[in-house]
Image (cartoon, rainbow, N blue to C red):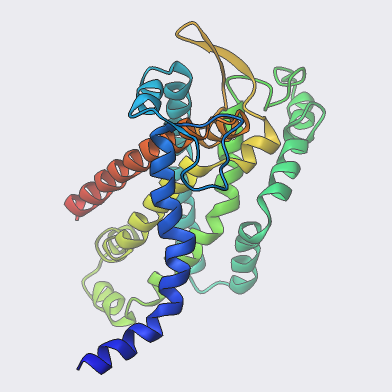
Length: 301
């Protein structure tokens, strides 16, 4: 038995080595950094270098930082704009393409294609479309609306975040569509035949047969969407760089400065301890949101 155990661990050793070096150690080291102050003279290549122990000072600084709370509010608004809308659009596309229609495979590929494009490319395309004299501004000018002509959609404090959210919903809808479509195709046709015999309408079939079976996909998309929003950076860096500028509780803030972008700023300012502490704060926040989604969807069932 002992020999079999050693043999099993020998097969696991390559994975455990990679896991320890590239996952476990960075997690432990980031906790260590979050409890210290890092300066320009700190040797980060030396694991336990001359960093000054700060205890919970970085976490207290986050708690008292207005700009951080603003970035978290922006992130929550971004979640509200993207996650429910993205799930709804993905589900609608899946239900429609699950019908026996011509060119179904073509439409599936067309809707999924934006999902495989690089975020940098997507961000640049939408930035040009949202710019003054861009596609959308030209359309609104033709119908007599010049409200966006001076700043474009991304330069307006009221439209910048919704504009980015719409772009990301359209980009990611194809991924959710594939998941929903796969789940729908796994439902036995016999169930729908029985529903037809009972005289159920299209809406009743969706509500009582399809929707309950799609709940695991909804939960998965809600949790992964939460993580994506907390880590969102590239689209904001390319399209707005955290602008336009506004004020919040007397502080100057960026209307689209989401937590991912704010975290990036702290790294560029060599505030590694603060950034590490912030990442763990967001980790706890993500766990809470995921748990709420899990409980809410389970109770709805």
